[in-house]
Amino acid sequence: MALAVHLSPTTWPPAEKSQAEHQEQTVFPQKVRSVEGRSALVTATLAPIAIRAGIEALKQGGTAADAASTIALTQVTTALGSYISYAGILQLIYYDSHTRKLYSLDAGWNSYRAETDPKTIPANDTGPQGRKTLVPGFMAGVEAMHKRFGRLPFASLFQPAIWYAENGIAISPLLANYFASREKDFARTPEGRNFLHQAGDHVPKAGDRFVQADLAQTLRAVSKHGAAYMYTGKWGRDFVEAVRREGGQASMEDMRSYRPLWDEPRSTTFAENSVFAPPGSKILSVLDLVTEKQLDRAQPYFKDWTVFRDLSNLLQSAERAPDPPRHSAAVVVVDRWGNVAALVHTINAVTWGATGIVVGGIPIPDPAALQQWRLAAIQPGDRLPNDMAPVIVMRGAKPVMAVASVGASVLAETTRILLGTLGNRLDLQTVLEAPPLLYNFQPQKAGVQFIPETAYDPDFLRNLEAAGIRTEKKSRIEVLTIKGTAVVGAINPETGSWRTVETPALFGLADAY
Image 1 (cartoon, rainbow, N blue to C red):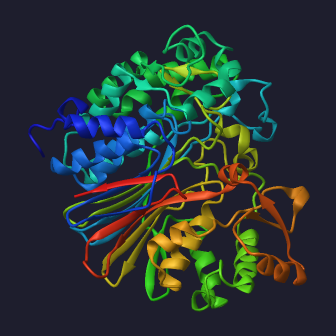
Image 2 (cartoon, rainbow, N blue to C red):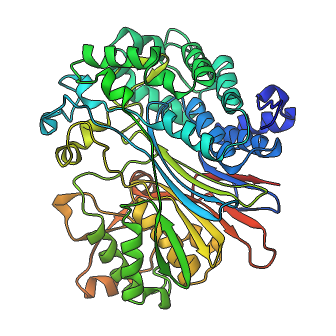
């Protein structure tokens, strides 16, 4: 255990802090860049400040678990709790170099014991907003990960998030658009209005500084008292009261009984490698089908229309669900000891959710409003299954790749990356910049393959049409709403170092040393 750790941005080199804050205003990397580290690698979605915080944790003796926790905590503050939340959930796959074993951590949603009719949970803006909430797992998951694999003091992991909560985040154009779309929902409650006006008495706009004083107090309490503060402490009690006031069925027993679940990840053999994923993940069965159809021995899907056809049909069949998965942030970390973390965290909802409920500076999302069918399939109070699918690839006894995917087409994104790198043996940059595979979630257009409008040449499309495959072109903006994206760390076979690639095609950024 380190005796003195200072992860606060006040200790960062000023130029690096300034650069991270400047980059926070944009969504995509500005150019292609290969990032390689002999000692450590960090890559994550949409979070230059959080990545800088993660690198600082590694440099001060932290493990991959410490850095991944620091990044995830900081991501939520810099995103203002919009698409990720301290009242959200997380999934982790972790390789521990000491035991040479892999571990899976499920910190997903728990349902409420008293919610016995989930099919009637409203799916729109009307109805009791409290019924749309669930017991969150994010903070319990962070604490469980740290207790098992961390080295730094738990409180130190919160320092960057607390600093930016207290000192403010400059509103980016993306966040300004989010606020404009959610003004009505926040305006519904006094707490929501207080949250909305943390940059002034107006809807936050680009360039405003958004200070989260209430959130900073909550994070300080968690850093001091542990995750229990959010389950059996004041925050947990306030959460139950707010949800019940809004018609929900939360109870303190629901909060007290929450536990993150450790399990052994499942695996399959793919292209002479072992791929490990959380229990219940569909990615392993999809890879088995890819192997069965010998697509790993064929041309890449973006070069051969028959492979595109077969792979798209395979994915469309595997991903049958009433609603698309909505996962929000991804993190991959490798530390100096060879520990590897692949983490995904999310709110399973559109930005902030529509509840208007805010507890201790944390907006409460509405994941139950989109997952009634899943809730109906479990017993009240049980853990809600999730389809997050971070993976770690082993070659023999050594990890060689970690992938964490987010977005709507999560399964397709993970599959195409593993197929391209391991099966087709393509360079990582080529794979990441290839056209995304898009899942069609529209029942009224069943059988139609969505494609980016400029991705394929006319002959490619004519061959698909002649084979009876209907396609529909999607604009760049439409693609952004339905694609998956991923962050990837992989062994460079020439140097033995871990590397990744930043590309304007994906909103993932990286750092290494």
